[in-house]
Amino acid sequence: MPENQITPPVTVTLQAGPAGAGSTDDFELFYARRAVDRFRTLLGRQGLLDLLAAEIGEGNAFLCESARTSDGTFGGGHHRARDEGPELG
Image (cartoon, rainbow, N blue to C red; front, side):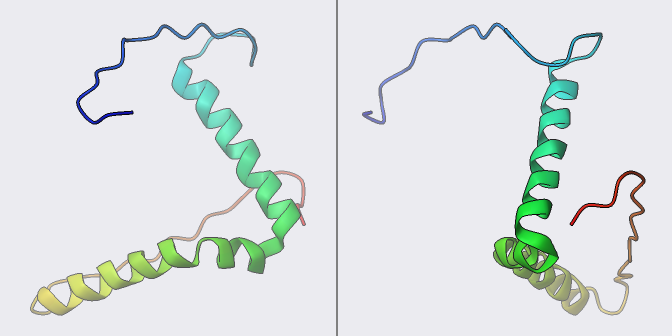
């Protein structure tokens, strides 16, 4: 498609998905979480880390650069997530 070509707007009508109250964001979040669970199940922990290696590296580089340029004021953090539900993998 040429760079200067403008595409007309489209209307998307949801035909299937979770029934009940909720926004499009809720719908997308539900399926995004389901996709991540499937990746974890199929790839295992190490496979998922390998898949995300580039993004993890970029995050680490950002944090290292933030610490380096902060003149000692950068306070890194640690987040520990706890899942509740069936054991996957």
